[in-house]
Length: 135
Image (cartoon, rainbow, N blue to C red; front, side):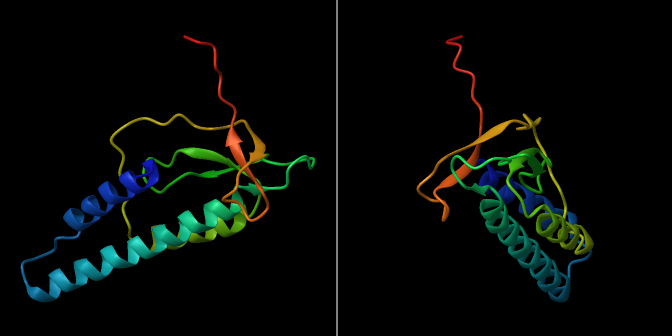
């Protein structure tokens, strides 16, 4: 399970708890609809983020933009493009009243390179530079 999935799962628990406006079946159905909508938007964002991280190996000016890694904690990650689409999806998440939740701190990824990735349709993905100092 990815960190995004774990945070997303936690976030939707928070959404469900934050939506309790009463004890009627209608309220429960409405709460579930909101949770489902937030889940759908979050899944759409995760898919768009995966596409935005795709890059072309050995091309110039790759992996120079940042985007939010997930709606929970709002940590940043490096992407190759399509930040306008990511921002539009993020705005829909906020407009829908979906809640951000965070139980930790971020390690924002601000430097990445285009590295080989077989899951990318372009063969490359923006991945953070890691320091292997041995400590």
